[in-house]
Image 1 (cartoon, one colour):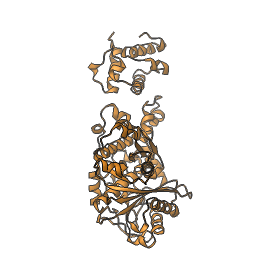
Image 2 (cartoon, each protein chain N blue to C red):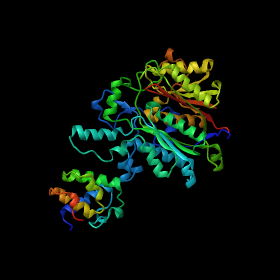
Image 3 (tube, rainbow over the protein chains, first blue to last red):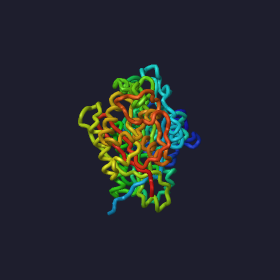
Image 4 (tube, each protein chain N blue to C red):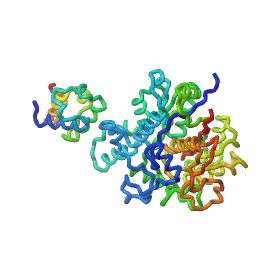
Amino acid sequence: MNDELTQRVIKIIAATQHIELEKITPESTFQELGIDSLDGINILFALENEFSIDIPDDAGQQIRTVREMVNGVRTLISGGDPAQAQA
Amino acid sequence: MPERRIVITGLGAICALGRNKDEFWDSLARGVCGIRPLETVDRTQFRVQNGAEVLGYDPAEHFPGKEREQLDRFAQFAVTAGREAVADSGIEWRDEQRERAAIVTGSCVGGQATENEGYENLYVLKNPRVNPLTIPRSMENAGASRLSLEFGITGPVYTVSTACSSSNHAIGQAFWLLRQGVCDMALAGGSEAPFGTGVLKAWEAMRVLAPDTCRPFSKDRRGLVLGEGGAMLVMETLEAARARGARIYAEILGFGMSSDAHHLTQPAAEGAARAMRSALSDGGVDSSQVGYINAHGTGTLANDPTEVAAIRSVFNSHAGDLAVSSTKSMHGHALGAAGAIEAVATILALDRGLLPPTANFTERDPQCDIDVIPNTAREQKVDYALSNSFAFGGLNAVLALGRFRG
């Protein structure tokens, strides 16, 4: 799925990590993109501001790919528990 | 084990007088004053209008992308100066050297700009979220840790915070680690970036900031002028320096420290004098051998006569033969970076045979009756020098340095 939400998340990853937009796909893993744990919390901070959501600590820690991140955000926006979001 | 001699083989500096050690020295030698109207803060909120800011500094030139966002301005100055010092020393690190190397830095206010931004978001803009890089950006050891990562240095790495004496304590500690054989090479110094709303307001409230400029030892002095920047030294054993054919700038001979135990902010001559005596005795230097003192010389009403009284009590009749200058008159008072910036000035003075002046000097003060090298640098070869740092809280740290003569 490459909808508007996915594009917004990818844009945030690109902007916070100084990565070219084209290099990020929903299938990209954080490892491939060189995103470490400190980078990860910086992305979560930007996502919280962008979407006015609160991402719980344990949900944030489990995310390893762009798709997992998009799904987590989607669940939070719709009021669900992101820990239950399907990868 | 015979006592190890410790020499300085690399220098780096960034401050209002220049973005590297060569620009810095050129300004010192010409007696240029780096104090100007502040540009990085909105001056309308402050009584104080002047400071000694680093001009023409573009973080993007030194720290691309994410790296820049992870480092507060104060840590950037430590890293910039550290990189320059390492490059200047010509060291090519081998793994076994990295384990036997140390980094000791000093800073007084650390990442205050980052903290300020966080508090503003939280309390003023009512944004409930604080940037997750706030902690790693604002920690006082941010510069030391980044340098450790960058050069792969895995020996003792730490930061000391003793207000305006921070980086003299840092350099002194690194010197002792080297002399004791705990490590063989060290990168030591400090950095500061105090120009933020909260810190400037706090300093204003202390009523020690000069409204015009910094005139240490001058009768019409009206206080200190804050500065920013960083400076780092590469120090190593004489043996290691010789083995790799390094260029040696100077020798670090002694370190002395003391506490006044007198008053939170009022200096006491006896405490300063004990730190100077202690540095001389630690280095086996006789007071009559000293030719130059880079004074703490803040330009406040209280510091300067107290420091002169301390110098007179240590040097007795030799005080009349001493050349003393406060380079804070040019690069401002960079708080936790002051000792390191002034150590670089003192080391280059020993190396070049040129003593930097006290700028902005207008009128002799009978309470500060000593040769302060007024306004113009002096060509004079000096064998031994002291560099003084005295802090609020009564903490004193003095380095004894010597011209390298083999």
